[in-house]
Amino acid sequence: MENKNMRETTKNWIGLGIMAVAGAALVAGSTGIYRSLSRIGRPISETAIYTPGIYTGESRGYGGPVTVQVEVTDREIVSIQVAGEKETPEIGGRVLNDLPFLMLRSQSAEVDSVSGATKTSEALKKAVNKALAQARGEEIQEQDSSAAEPMTLADGEYVYEDEQFDEKGYKNVIKLTVENGAIVSCDWDAVNEAGEGKKQLSMEGKYVMTEDGLLWADQAKALAEYVVENQTASGLADEEGYADAVSGVSINIFGFVNGVEDCMRQAAGETAVAKALSDGEYVYEDEEFDEKGYKNVIKLTVENGAIVSCDWDAVNEAGEGKRQLSMEGKYVMTEDGLLWADQAKALAEYVVENQTVSGLADEEGYTDAVSGVSINVYGFVNGVEDCMRQAAGETAVAKALADGEYVYEDEEFDEKGYKNVIKLTVENGAIVSCDWDAVNEAGEGKKQLSMEGKYVMTEDGLLWADQAKALAEYVVENQTASGLADEEGYTDAVSGVSINVYGFVNGVEDCMRQAAK
Image (cartoon, rainbow, N blue to C red; front, side, top):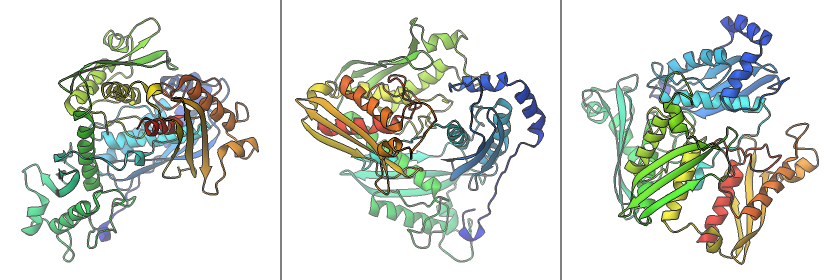
């Protein structure tokens, strides 16, 4: 509900229940489980897939956090409990009620999203995937969203509008004006299908929340003034979408924060492109084939300083591309939904239209910005950014690095209490040493802890310290971290490395950007 005093907590707890018979059948015929796992590209064990227990995952949905508790045996998902207290009952609520049953039936989080509720669907799938990753003993690292701050904003007017009307029949519209690189005005309204806005309706007494307290219009104005004064909406909303930072504001502001952040990404993305790109054709290709035998190939054409065409394919060693294979029915992801070729085309069109991939991918490599796209776009974003760096004259990395020592450190500790610290040393324009550790608040590093047996991932396999060392040696040998991580943040390029390397790659690239300045 919008007023804090009127909040109702709606929890949707979905257990196994009627799935007991199906669960027994799966235990008896476990090949069905293995097939479902192979569809999401995970390692398959002949004996056990999971460590039995209950695991928790969380991801941000449309209205707030979506939290799951997933119970597993050694080879089966037994139950999924879901809590999404701030999701809209009519839209997000359908996701929380329907998808867990589909996941139990397929023994996988990779099920079709609910139409009209993509963000909540993806949030639920991500949360379940996080829980299952823990059950498999995998270390999950998420993209440090703060790395992109502070933003450099291009002058102009930017508009965000929700794609769908909410359960009350309104959609958010946020407008942001930037002058001389600063936000000078911000406006928020929520309009219905008749075009009537909550601001005007509340002033006319036609949209009333409580008998006392500020009108909706006054609360919206106060929030807009906060953004202009602070030049950000970061930290404005608590985990449930409410604000204590602005006096008198009791309405839920998740929609407002989402819209402001979208407008700021628009402003930041346009700045980076317009000034930097030289005309020409630019190509990016992964150095290695991924675990499924494909490598990304992205081509970008720039004319008059603007991107005029973008092309994405993923080819196997035989030279066959996913685009053609999907059109011939030889590369099938789901029975319904867009073909891989159509999703790749839609993403390419997004780049041409927006002149950037900034803000396209969320922290786990998926997108809500392009309708119908369910595939992981990390490889695509990485390739487009590489092409744009080429066009901006930043291609010759080895020649561009200034001698010195460079350090990257995550701004926040992750959910396990660690932050990445990467150190890079450049001599004579080349990387001569690389070091990676992840330290907790006590200053203890995973390297030392793993060598002392205090940080153990699996009973067999390399220690964390050994894997970190192998990755650092890869960077020194190859003078780059480009192509090291697959679309989910793992690597096949370095033998014996099973940990997620997204944080490492992010840190190395940050150090190299420092050295290239």
